Image (cartoon, rainbow, N blue to C red; front, side, top):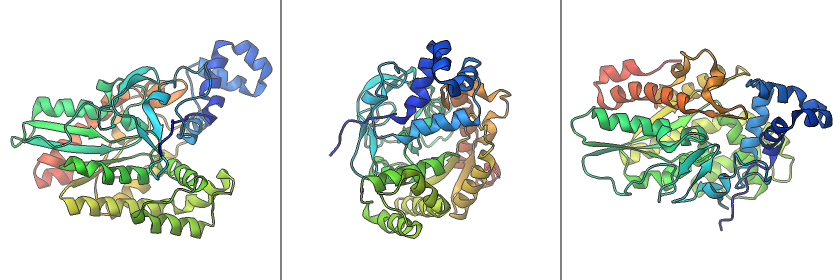
Amino acid sequence: MRGPFHFWRSAVAVGTGALCLLAAPSVATRMLPPTQNVIMRLQRNVLNARDLALQRRGYYEELDTGGVNSPQNRWFDGMKVFYRGRSDFLMGEIVPSVSTILEGSPVTSNHLGMRDREYDKIKPTNTYRVVLSGSSHELGAGVRDDQTFENLVEDRLNRQLPDARYSRYEILNLSVGGHSVLQRLLRLEQLGFELQPDAAIFCVSEMESQLLVRNLTKSLNRAIVPPSNYRELVEGITRRAGVHGRMPDAMVERKLRPYVPEIYEWVFRRFAAQCAQRGVRPLVVYRPAPVDFEGTEPAARSEMVRIARAAHLEVIDLSPAFDSVANRNTLIVAKWDDHTNALGQRLLADKLYDDLVPLLFGLPSQQTSRLQRP
């Protein structure tokens, strides 16, 4: 049922190509004149909107493989060890209990198949447990295990012990690179709720539309049948959009894009309902992108926060976390990799802690005042 994860086939043009071209720019620019400007920007440690779009396209387009099929691109070789494919609607997952180097940093998974520390599946006594769902930025691609913002928040909670009722705090990271909001919700339902959480954090960002339409397109291409509780939504939208798996990917994505807000609404309503049934505190966290050359983030953020609040969900907006950083290029892992680096992860952790503690453990009046507004 599960096969080896091939990853990054289309990233050769940006990730692999950029690394190789940097090694021999004079030869490359003579052979491939259109690449010259991109190479110069990479050498100057600068990305622009087109570079970023191409790089993201490469990263998320083929999240069904375990790395780039190129011996020259060592940066992403860890994908072949860390991820594996699935033939169901989740499409991919983290291999349990492995260690490798991923995007320049050591990365470890636990026995539950999370990029995180080891935890017992049964929640210990006197413990406040949170599960956190996200994609590759929340997973911490490109930083060490102890530098992810969720681990930093967990460490601070256990140092400061903000609520006398609990002697231990745990944040279990369910994030998987490339998962859209649909995969995140399904993983929460299949695994996260079994972990007996007191609260569930559902992270979103300006990348959600891109991830969503690409994963739906992949599921159509592979004739994957959605889970029964998701089938009416997915099949209804694909039918109204007039798309099928034999269409070109670009056409499918274009036709699906107008239905993205409707999917957000369904996901947030179901997230709220599933948490309410189990007595779990649901929270939506908006995570800002480290760089936003296209200027699309404000609109994406506003839409996401509005839809989440319409579902009566509490929202923490981490957008101000990067306000003190004048050069946002200093927040990315590498010139060819726009994942949030260790500095960015720390800034996100500081902001999340400041807003999360009053919300979960403070007085009701404090909870209301600490919510970020659009």
